[in-house]
Image (cartoon, rainbow, N blue to C red):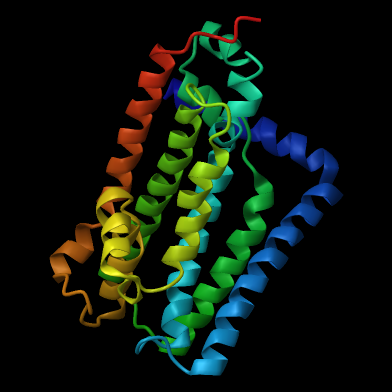
Length: 267
């Protein structure tokens, strides 16, 4: 409870600081909204040209798109401290200050900044998701709502874990950002489409190594109440988002391993 209180204070300080420059915040949020708007325009152009994507309709793909962008925007907003960990903490030696404070380093990095500018991607994802639900005329049961929230929570855990892994690499590498961008931003691009359209080796990688399919594809197939082209059973689709949470705990354990082997900058 004491850590939760401390984190809440971090959040309030971060919000207050960002609201000191409201024009900058609004412009940043609008830039995020415009950038993701171009992505959905590309998807629309794809379907306008070809009509369907391997038996998937535009509304169904937009459902995938909306869920993954809502999930990633929340994870991205919460994980700023880990996202900038390499250049801002390890490379400059400022991580030593965090180690000297009587608080957990994960808590301090988690409270480094709540990136409100990510609200642009969040809004765009919610709008696309809402349109897809209306177009598909989905009837939401309590189980469907629970699975959707579980999928969002698992997705936040997965993307947060990927960013934590990026931070962990900073203990041993000079520049690891581009390596992990292929998993984070590349993963978002991948999950915007149904997983069955990809090659088998690619699907296996984003199911068993990076469990992206577990937090997006499988639960959404269950919510749509359709038969999975990949043949997964309904019970697996219902519990698959847990893989994202497990991945987060694994990433945090890996980060603590990196902390134990941290030797400072020597400056």
